[in-house]
Image (cartoon, rainbow, N blue to C red; front, side):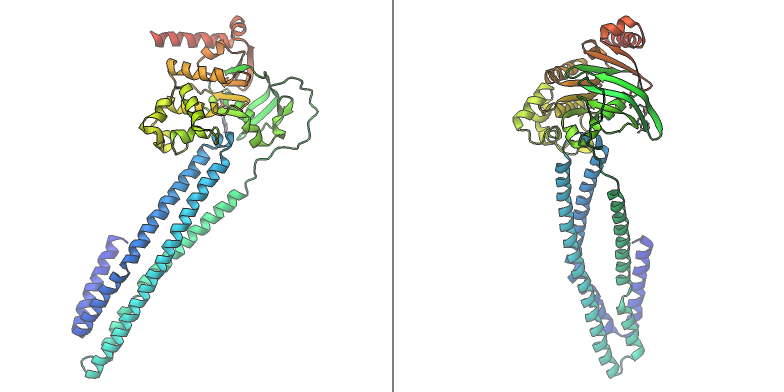
Length: 446
Ligand SMILES: Nc1ncnc2c1ncn2[C@@H]1O[C@H](COP(=O)(O)OP(=O)(O)O)[C@@H](O)[C@H]1O
Ligand SMILES: [Mg+2]
């Protein structure tokens, strides 16, 4: 209620009472007592309504935060099988919301009933006492009628009704939104029938990929072989399509034309979730859900034991994050309190947690680490990727020097590929980039 409206109400009450006292003193005192006592009787209900209302909205905002996490972290949530866990978490919030809402509605009902009862008693009082005064000749019927009109107090039920009407309208709006979302098609694998491809190489094979994003052509005719159980480093200027290539591998995007194979089988025919179960993926932007550091690492393997988690955090050098008091601290605001490097190492630990992953994909996953912490993380990664297919997008070119293959991408095309030594001998794009990077490194070291 606005201040102006409150003032108007106060004036109304004061002037009505002055007017009443001219009509009949006894009736006025009686109605003041009723007007004060009845709200007092229903005030505990008002308090419970408010508490439940607050709890209700607290749960609502928690569930909304979860939805926000889910949308913003869609890449990670699709990459790791955490869907059921999140649904379960959401379900819990919904149950709590329903619990508080039910309680609130019950109290609101009681509150309304108390209002009706108090109005009823008020009317009885005015009728009986007023009638008696008329009988004694102290008042006329018109004055009693004036009292009655004031007791009707229509304004409150009307305002309550109008607020419920508003609530109904917002609920309808939310429901409509949910129906819209339900109509978005689910990710499904394409037809199971095998294409009669001539691909005979194991590992990844991009065959003449054409891909558009929001009507923008990202890849025109991309062909590339990434060997199985080898380390491939993808380099290239920013915006050249490196992350998009990884998104294709993850099945986040589908090519408009062309096929991507893994071990001679198109990845599009696989169930998207089963396919991603085979991959440990660290996106360019490390994503943390609201929860503890441990919970965040656990997304990599929900059944991981404490020992497994301790082992992996030790390896990437963030044991201090789960050992000291911050262990069970929430990484609020999706990691607001952690440094960029810590977030990246949490994301790496998450990826390395599950030894059953066959493929490791990193997208500039060490960009925020200093030399020392990067070496620790890279050692853990190197140990993990033995006998695994390992693809990483790197902007620090140290990793390229020991990769089995370096792929240089520019404008959505592979312009050079080979080992570091081979590409250096070419004296082409990679050579230039490497020298520039090395000079910059030397400058920053001095
Ligand atoms: N959702 C999108 N819609 C339209 N264009 C996009 C989208 N995502 C990326 N791009 C564009 O695709 C190109 C390649 O992006 P990206 O793969 O992220 O490059 P890199 O990882 O090499 O920096 C860029 O020009 C980028 O602007
Ligand atoms: Mg990128």
